[in-house]
Amino acid sequence: MKQSNKLETWGSETTMNLNNILYQNIQASPYFKHLYELKTYHEVIDEIFNHVESLEPFLKGTTASTAFCLLYKLWTLRLTVKQVNGLIQHTDSPHIRALGFLYLRYVCKPIHLWEWFEEYLDDEEEVQIQGGPRPVIITIGKMCRQLLTEQKWLGTILPRIPVPIAREIEQKLKEKSQPPLPPR
Image 1: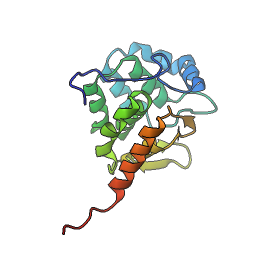
Image 2 (image 1 turned 90 degrees about the vertical axis):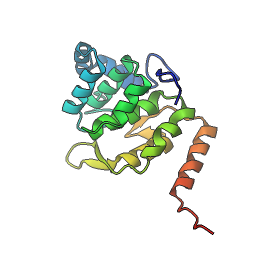
Image 3 (image 1 turned 135 degrees about the vertical axis):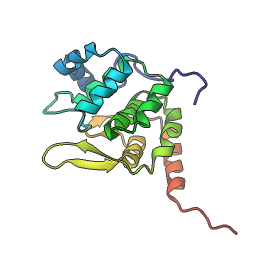
Image 4 (image 1 turned 30 degrees about the horizontal axis):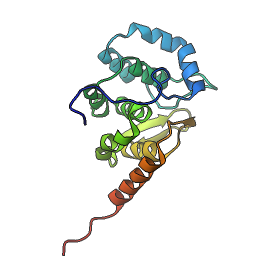
């Protein structure tokens, strides 16, 4: 990563590259308005720990989820490299980690995604991504792979990764999943 502690971001400074319906519903959310009271990174982390149970963008219909309201709240804090590392390495809750990876997927310059995600692609910690009567649970590693290769996350569109970078990521994932050649 860069020597500076400032996370290099790209895209919309306002919307965090969220799709418009999701962005507008976060802005209109009474829960998001309640989050104005939280002023520090640690207060937001505690809120994620206490209130995030799954990672869907929407609850019922188009109501923005707790997880995505908190994801956008993190954006309003303009996280540093150190803080993002704190999220993705957090030991208390897989949801804190998962929101760190979602944060990166939405705002990190696409050219830097691989270096952020690579060491977590085989992470076995489980995280519940969908709630309801049939909850969906996957590993952090699988989530990271999906974020790098899919155009959508649970029904909402992710920011586009430029084709050359997407191809490079696909190639690196293929190489990573092949067993190493035996020594000669």
